Image (cartoon, rainbow, N blue to C red; front, side, top):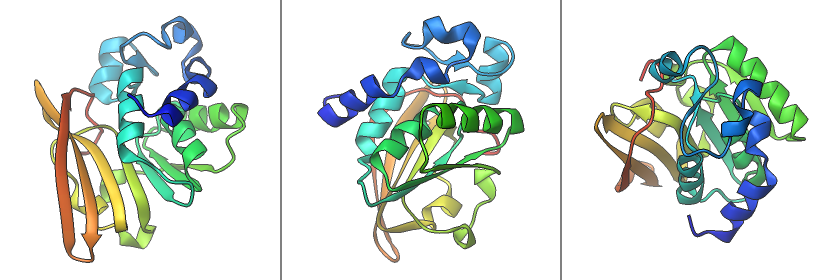
Length: 198
C-alpha cells in the first residue's frame, strides 16, 4: 500500500474501535479477527474482520472518489464501511447477520461516521432495482464475479472482489466502460473467507 491518503486514513480510523472487546489487542495483527463465535467458526461463516493489509489494499485499488456512492457487501463490524465513508459521498453496506449489522451501526456511530447506511440484506439477491453504484466492494471472497452486482455499476463504476477457491484466489477489478462493455483485471493473489450465499 503506497497511496498516502489510504495510509493516512488507516491511522485516523481506529481499527481497534471496530474489533470485539476480547480481540482489541489483535487489531493490527496480520490476521482475520473473529466477530462472532470461535475463530474457526467465524472463518467458516465469513463472520470476521479481514486482515488489515487486505482492507488497505482493497481500499487503495478501488480508488473511491469524494463524489461517489459505494456499495459494500459484508459489513461485519463496520470497519471497511468506515474507511469507504471517509472517501465517498455515501456508502450503503449490506450484512446478513442482524447481530453484526447492529454491531456495525454502533461502531460507525461511535466513530462519528454519518454517511454510511447499514442495511440487513443478502448481496447475492440484489438487482438494479436496488440502485446503481460507482464502486462495489466485496468484503470477503466469492467463487466467481456476481453478474447481479455487475449490472448495478454505473458507467465508470468498479467492482472489486476476491475471486476463486482455496488455495488460489485472485483480486479482480471489473470496470463498466460502457452500457454493455466491462473490463476485468486480475491484480494480486490472496485469500479471504467466503461471503455467504456467493
